[in-house]
Image (cartoon, rainbow, N blue to C red; front, side, top):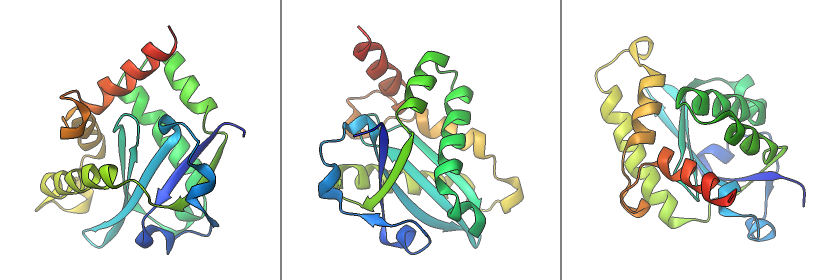
Length: 173
């Protein structure tokens, strides 16, 4: 199998995608670092994508997606993840490793309950951080940085970004 990301899409997201939804069973051997769950929420009547990594909890919130972005979601996710990792000041070698793993992206139904629980926490935080703000006033960078420095209970008291960096440091030794 070539380097690929497997993204478990919620039903709401599947309805927006022009991609084929594959059988998750086919990809259960893919390492957790290459598995993600994605959900679609609506904030201020605009579609927002929440994406979370199964291994580390690293997460990305994309605000105000439109149809053409859903049609090219692979490129949108790859470019946005790169920007996020640069913003979080991740070592460029780690960013390159991550990008090399995402040559291909396949979409499946969601399958990871623990991640869905963490994503519910993430959704509540995004809603709390944007409450009462006009869409134009939402600071997407600030929210993404905060969410990756927040401690989610299943992550052994370490933030997603520290879990992510630690994973790559440990896997290269």
